[in-house]
Length: 80
Length: 80
Image (cartoon, rainbow over all chains, first blue to last red; front, top):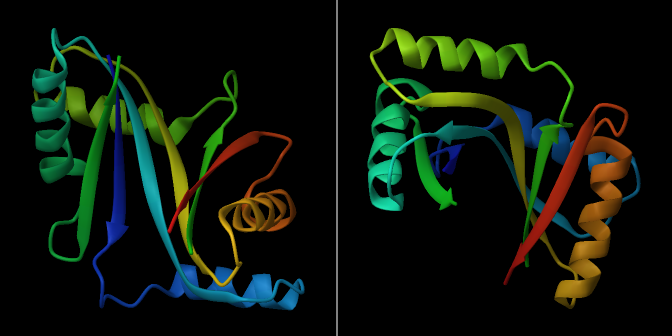
C-alpha cells in the first residue's frame, strides 16, 4: 500500500523558499502569481494490511519524524 | 485559483534523501516500510481565470523552473 505524506509550513510561518520561488517566477515573466508556499512530500511503500492501518502508521511517522509539528502541518493520502 | 505542483525524482533515479528517511523510520521501530521516495511540493496562488488556464500556466512553470526535467517528473493539481 502506498502512502503519501505532504508536509507544509503552517500558515503564518515565514516561507523564504516559497518567496524565492515566487520572485523567480516573476523574473521569468509569469504574471498573476500570488502567494507561493514550498513543502515536501514523502511517498512510502507500506505493507500494512488495510488503508486505515496504513494511514495510522503514516500519521505516526509524520508526527515522529517527517514533520516538525511546531512549525509544520501534514496530510496523508493512501493509495492501494 | 490554487495550483499544487508535486515534483518527484523519476523512477530509477537514486534518491538518497528517501533512503535516509527509510533507514530512520526503521531505526525508530517502524516495520513494513518498503521503498521511500522524497520530493517537493509547491503551492501557488494564481489569478488565472479558469482551471485549464491555471493548469497550463503551472505546467509551464514546472517545466521552466520548478522541476529539472532530466531527473524529475511533476504533476499538477488545481483547486479553486
